[in-house]
Image (tube, rainbow, N blue to C red; front, side, top):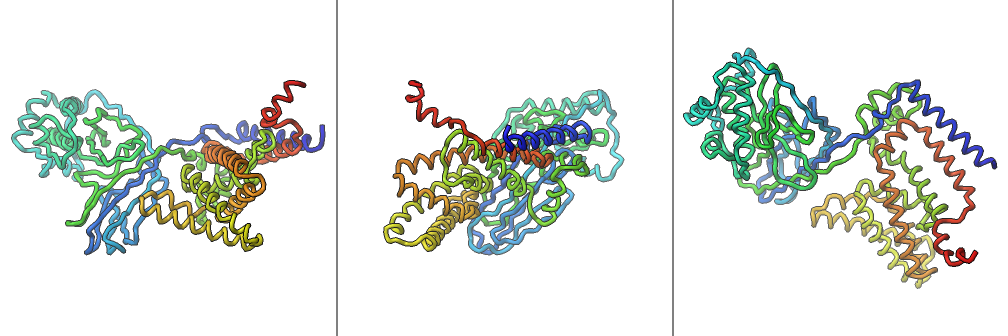
Length: 522
């Protein structure tokens, strides 16, 4: 066995022993490392005709026992924003004079949610609420007409002849849940829903609250969003009833009794509008929702004091304002480099540069893979076309690179303008692409065209793009990121793989195909 292979074996053995110690002695567990499902919610709010200033308010997601806000960021368009906690929820208010009479403000929240199910007893007596604050949830309102003759009559015909609170809640819930769903068209009050026997979520919820309050059971409306992937304009309302000191969810629209699914995001309580804006101002909104994977929230809690992990380094980065997302991508760059080495040394693929695909894949994390590839291909095409006249005019290397860099920067700035024109926010992140990386990659493309022809350059471009896609998918694996944060000794395995690859003398996989006819005759 040669020395590089022996060193690789020693490093791999040492890593295996250290990992075994972590799990057998230091109480590491796989469940702390596995990623969690999360949600990305972008709330876009467009306005127009706001010559006298803008005032828009909405409710923000807040932490509670079943939902956790990992991060929230705002797009203000220069309009001052004020965030205030209220008894109904956390409200954000944009108020001021925008730079133009039309525009868009938004917020982006990264969320972790979990389902919750309540097990109710068979019998609970209805009693007068002792807490004065609960009396608010028994009173009549303009849209929840507890004492209206129609509600009184309906209540008396439905209410069980018992003082069992659970029986009353179930009876009223089942009755309202039997209504046909009706598309949302403005506000539907409790009386209208009772008379029509059909309603949208807000009408059904108001009627259920009215019936519960009529039975002296504290009840309230809850507003939020059902998070399903894609773009939508539909918010949601459901009900909470106060049972034995707990607000228990009831959703007659989607038939959830004492249960709230994971994808229910609670924004506010009470009969509130989700959005408010200045009279006379044009306004529309839209939700963009994505499923995402997030590092396990218990990782930091359980591994902080354990030895030999990167959490303390992560905390140091955070204290200096460097986000975890950036740290994890930096941590994964060596993994991307090893993947590229395998493609080049073992598979036999060609790329523009040795590690440039890993840097482009890392930059694509901010834009998304699709826009990252579009930006990459657009820039190298532009600079490759520019390379011809510069080469023909015998412009030397350094000035030529400077001119190319100007072209790259211009292309990235143009992407920002296009993003504004077509309202595609992710494209703006192309401006964050490492300009030098794109310039060097584009020059390699142009040189390949000059030396080997357009066909060869296009083939290398296809291979480079393929490697970028694979490296991007591997580098963004949340589970793999968590493993390297918890077990940085895995980098020794990467060194071992590099030592083995460096001594690779076998035939590359592409060469089997290239020399397939010759090998048949051997």
